[in-house]
Image 1 (cartoon, rainbow, N blue to C red):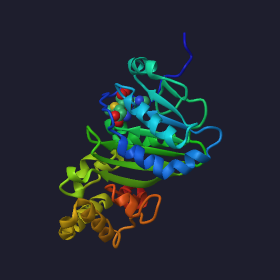
Image 2 (image 1 turned 135 degrees about the vertical axis):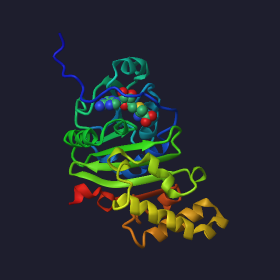
Image 3 (image 1 turned 60 degrees about the horizontal axis):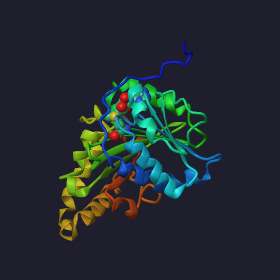
Image 4 (image 1 turned 45 degrees about the vertical axis):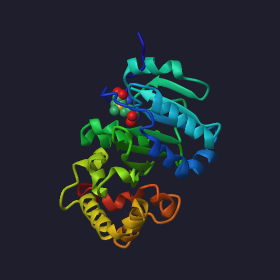
Length: 271
Ligand SMILES: C[S@@+](CC[C@H](N)C(=O)[O-])C[C@H]1O[C@@H](n2cnc3c(N)ncnc32)[C@H](O)[C@@H]1O
């Protein structure tokens, strides 16, 4: 009989889709490329909860290897059938294994990506999962925990370090939204129930929409110009990241905007 502990978590829906996580992958390689390149030994990146197909893990591996040729990726899934289905796609540097929030890998990961996983848990359990995963990180490592639409046009993610949550990032294909608050339906579990009056995330999305409305005339030059002007307007009232790697026009023009977690943390966590 195996003595291996049961993975921490529950099997949930395995929905996934080709290229669905490209917005996050693009951000990860741009923002955390230096962290990955500096890691010794080779950086280990965990893709937790890859779902019914290996595809988003394989895409992550391919994108990471372009910038860090020695990066290793471990796809972890709590459903043994999904591990069996993905395993034929393993190759040097890319593995698939059974595991949960305890992150059973052979060394502390530099990055953990967990996308569309925690939204299926209740809020308390999602926060416990954050804490458990944080304790497994390599020094200076990060967790990227987010949610996106079916084909990835709308996404938000929280970045956590060993010390706790650091930032919240919004990312949208601008032709796919009418207003920034369309992203509210894709907020991570820690915020989705907090989008109500009195909570900071509600106020941020309200002001984001208002800036978008005020900047409507910039739309004459295209949606990208309107979004750039919107984020610049929002940054006068909110601590939007305005310099690289997290902020600045280079990121905003991609339909991205990042704020510190402290600006949006639910009231119960800030006292
Ligand atoms: C909706 S799929 C997401 C697939 C992929 N990450 C994506 O975004 O397209 C969620 C997957 O997470 C898995 N999962 C849920 N809890 C988990 C846990 N604690 N550890 C590992 N996998 C988990 C589920 O079994 C499911 O296959």
